[in-house]
Structure formats: structure tokens, C-alpha cells
Length: 257
Image (tube, rainbow, N blue to C red; front, side):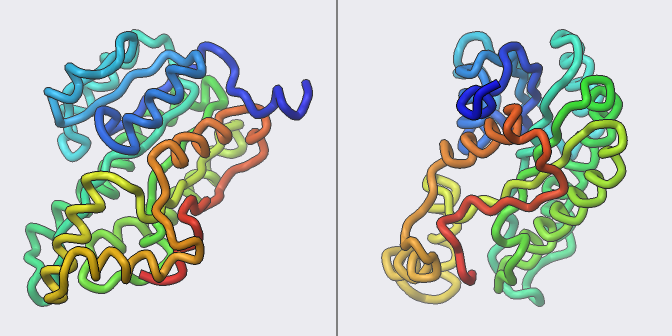
């Protein structure tokens, strides 16, 4: 196999992407489909699921609901196994000081961002052992940096990195690789809402908040959802076969948050 060939995932990979109907998840699902994979996604957005490209199967479900996860994995059986699991579901959580964040807000953020990844890992581990497959957990640069006024989000993403490294140790002897991708500021509606909320908290304009964020990035730019998808494809290709237990930032080098 040539080096160039090693950068291309093999045809027919069986792939599950959580929160795969919008944003980063959709970019990942589309990229795998274009690479010849069989792709199944879950999402809470029914309208977005109905608009998925032809050939991507789906389940309406919430990763914070154990019954929805049970139903998801019943649907996944139609793939005949799993080679790649992309644990992408997550929410931004509240933007507030710690004394203002309610226990309900804290728990809800952790339940989706961390417990949701546990639930998917819990159900998919046996399938990935059978295929000697790959799990990709979406964390964030907030999983390696402190993030004022976003403590539930940052805490959950640091925990995802710990989950990733621990699962890599646990599943590695069976040939399963586990990695985390840490996106930076990803262009799209979600970051626009985060910037808006943070600007309001700081009492400054949206434009000033956006420029302040960009000033903290070495390359002074946001990344695209397709940049995250490209990393997921590389990890799934033969060239990524010895990469495991890693927290891989795709962020144009975010220096601080």
C-alpha cells in the first residue's frame, strides 16, 4: 500500500455518528458517506434527520435518554456491525458564573456531554472489539484550557479526554483504537450563539467578542466543520492505524479561551 492509498478509508466501513444531522456531526456523516461508508446517525432534530442525504440511515434519539440509546442500537443492527463510532453529541451549556449556574443546568450539560458518551461507549464496545474498530470522541479545546463562565462545558470536555485515554488503555489489547478530536472555534450557528451569549455577559458587542476570540488563536481564524471531518477520516484510514489514546486539537492553535 502506498502512502497516498493509506490516507483513504477502506470502502464499506460501518459508521455511527451521534448528533449527525447538523453541524460537525453532519459534516462527518457526509464525509464518511462520500468515502463509501455505510452511515447511521442519531439526532434530536427530527426535521434535520428528514433532510439527510439519501443513503444515510437514522434514529431519532437523545443520548441523555437510556431508552433512546437502546432503540438506537437496535436500529444499528441493520449495518451488520460497527467499524467506527463517532461520539459527537453535545451541548454548549449555560454561559454564567458558577454561582449563577443551577444544579439542573450543570447536570443537564454533564448528562449529554459526558454521560451520553459513556452510554454510546457502553453499547458499542463489544461491536468495536469484534471489528477491531475505532471510537472517536468529540471533546473541545475547552478540554485542555480553562474557560471562564462555561464551567459545565469545560468540565465535561476535560472528562471526555480522560474517558478517551482510559478507554484506549482498556480496549487497546483487543485492537480497538480510541481518540478524541478537540475542535476549536468552528464556524456555524452554534458558535454564533456562544459568542452572542458571552458578549451579553461581558457587556460588549458581538463583533468585539468575535475579534477578541480570534485574537486568542495563533492563525487568527475559525476552523470549518469539514476540517473536523477530515481528521475523522484520517483516523479511520490505514494511515491512522497506530494512533490511539490521543487528544488531537483541530483549532488553528487556540492559545487561551
